[in-house]
View 1 (cartoon, one colour):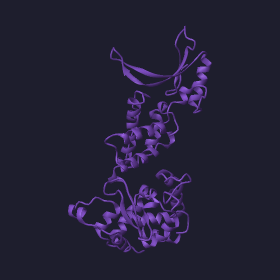
View 2 (cartoon, helix red, strand yellow):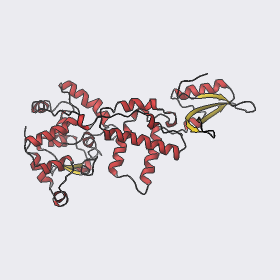
View 3 (spheres, rainbow, N blue to C red):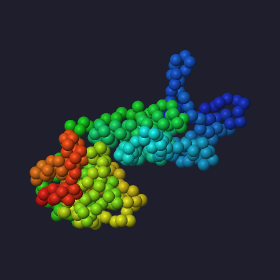
View 4 (cartoon, rainbow, N blue to C red):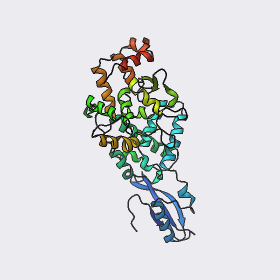
Length: 355
């Protein structure tokens, strides 16, 4: 019986065996002694009767665990392989930085659809829809997702012996050049409309993004311990050396919103029911996109950062201060090394924006 690609198969191993019928999956290809490529397999379980083997195969592909056979149950999921791979990376002498680990986590969450799937059974066709969703992202975003998947497979091949082929190489990864990404800032008329609707669900978060200049993921990852309401600033940031752990002043106009969400009991300023930070995808799909549709505004979350830069230019904010707030690199070595700016100075500067 011919099975669909990636489904697995049942083979008869011949007479003389108590359980001659084996369920196996293809794990890759390798060269034989003659120099030809042949398929390699992983054998999952053995049966006396073929009907039992096919029943096992069907149950396996339906996503149900077959409790009588530990070999299938023990196969690690995508999540379990990621956890093992990350622990391995962190244990290395040259471990990744905290910022890099955070970026690994962001990339990992993009594979949410396959987190619970058995890693050895996943194929490029399972990853392609995930890659397709990233087409409009930057090369760095797509590159991080590809890197995490690629390295997970290298670890699974060399350390776990789960498979023999790196399927990340067979996924088509596309991205949008930064130069071609068009970000349209909120107009002042739109910002005024947001203020008029400030008590409507999530409008306040939009204003907090606009007045802080944060990247969306930085905003969603703000930790309560880093917020200093009395002094009017918080510590946040990721992605680049200049952007990590930077001081962000809280504009007077949005300070009440920060106070609204602040709770010492919570780890994050915004967190889901499990006490974790929202993922970008979760927030965009369930909160941001519905809000923009209701308000009749076709903006992406990144447009808020572009809006802040536009307002900073219009209200003539100090360019050096703006770079510090937004986490942009500073080419002037003297300024970067010797200039210390107090949070109060940044707060006074950002409060020049008045709409």
